Length: 267
Image 1: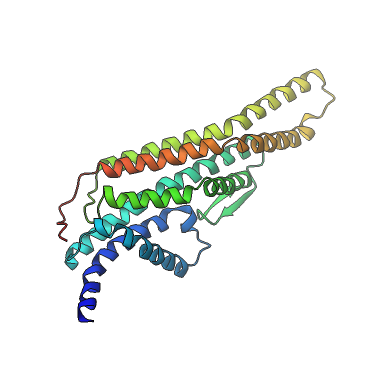
Image 2: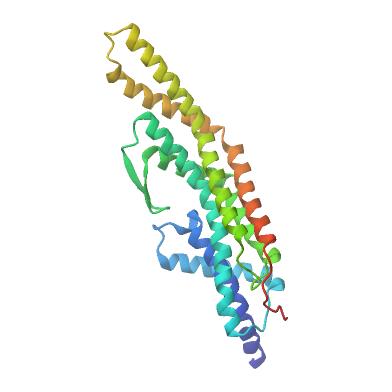
C-alpha cells in the first residue's frame, strides 16, 4: 500500500500536464466552450477526458517532475490545447461568417440573435449556418479527428517540451485567412444568385415603371437567398471535411516543428 501511494504521487505531476492540455482544448473548442454549459460540467468533462487520455499517452510523459517544472510546463500545455481548440473554432467562424454575409446581402442582417456557443451576437442566417456547420462537423466525425489530433500532439510535442515560437502566430494568421476563404466559398452561390436578382429587378423597374419593385423585391431576395443557400450548403459536406482535415493538419505540422524545450524527460 505505501508503494502504491508513492506511485500515485509520482504520476500526479504527469497527470496535471495532461489535464491542462485537455483543459486548453475544452476552453477554446466551440463544442466544449459554450457559455450554456455550466463551469462545473466543463471542469468535470476536462477531468474525465484527461483520465481517459492519460493511460494512452503515459509512455510519452516524463515522471519524477519537481513542482517548479510542473508549474512552468502547465502554461505550455494550456497553450497547446488553446491552439488546437482555436483551429477548430475558426472552421465554425468561417461558416457563421458566410451566413452573416448572405444575411446582409439578402436584407435581413438587422435581425440579430445571441450565439451562446461563441458568446456573441450574430444574424439569423449566420446562426443557422453555425448550427449547420456543427451538425456537419459531428456527421463527418470531426470531434473524433480532434481527439486523435490531441493524442498525436503527445507524441509530437511531449508534455513539458513546449516552447513558444513565432510559427504559432503565423499559423493563426494562416487559419484566419483560410476561414475567410471558406466563408466566401460558402456564400458565393447565394451572392451570385442575389446579384442576378438585383439585375433582373433593376431591369424590370426600368422596363415596367408601374411595378413596385421595392414592395416585392425584398421578399424575392430573401426567398432566393435562403433557397440557394440551402441547396449550396447541402453540397458542402466534402468541402467541410477537407477544411477540417486541413486545419488540423496544419496545426499538427506546426506543433511538430516547434523547437523543443529544455525539460528533462527522466523516466
